[in-house]
Length: 157
Image 1 (cartoon, rainbow, N blue to C red):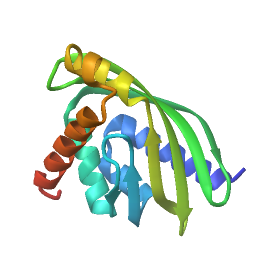
Image 2: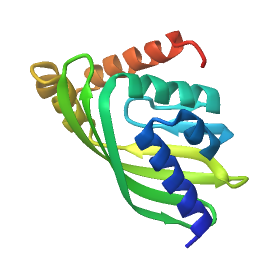
Image 3: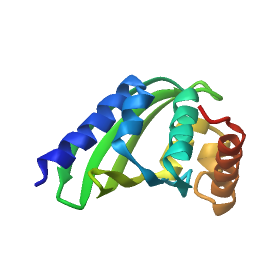
């Protein structure tokens, strides 16, 4: 167990819960990459932080909690729960997420979140889209393309 890395992951999630972007950014290596079922690959700290600003902007009243943080000298895992109202539909979402981290120079250089896309789409989008199409590759591509376009259009902060 690497207590320093456990503390770093805890600091990241605490900052996420406060929407403290500066504190979140301090946890990331300049060459960090992020991936999840929606934003498959986002490269570089500036772009990853833009992604978080975008995500927190479409999630009204985000509440998050984390648990089960384990870390060694190179990697860490954690589980977190994200509760929010999805801005575009007004629907309540409770998303269970498993995270994997890799470290370099004492900072997070790789952050990957995994969650059930179909379950998320049913909660966030409702009927008919999430319920009927949430599992299809075409629908996933539509959601991913829309998210990437929003990220590309967002100006750096």
